[in-house]
Length: 203
Image (cartoon, rainbow, N blue to C red):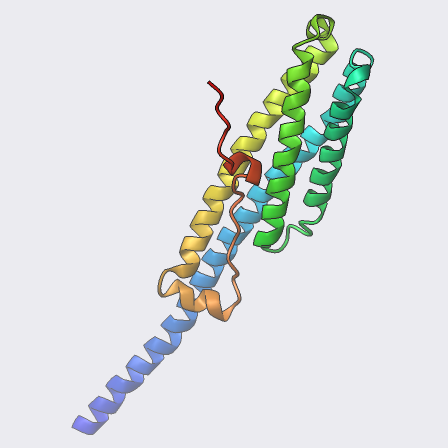
């Protein structure tokens, strides 16, 4: 009698475990997959805003180059930096996978160089009263500023989603499922090398 009840109890426990474990695995897998999709979607917002920003540059260069013929080096630097940043964005690859940290760092650095060249160009525009008064140039600068704000917001949103995804990956027991199903670490979109450099202060 005792043996039969013990066997029945063990069988009940085995059935419960056999049901609970697969359900737990499916729930954790799905939550990790959803977090990864949110992270990928957040990165696609950076992609959209950067492309929009890159598309504005040829118009800005065209609008100012007649006034700034002797600033050819600055205009060429902006154009080259734009191309390098676009290449960095293209090198990211399909957004259906987790973006490799090395590619995110390369993109961040190329965007940093592009930002620096663009700041130099916009600084030069300030020195030309006719350019400052040009409606076309003013509108392009406003659009660039607006897009820059959107890029910054998209980067923050992406980094937040990466942090949530990476946290889910490393906490126990989700880490067991993440490891078993190859949920790789998401890469943060950090500051570029130029942004991290200490500013030179002249007094």
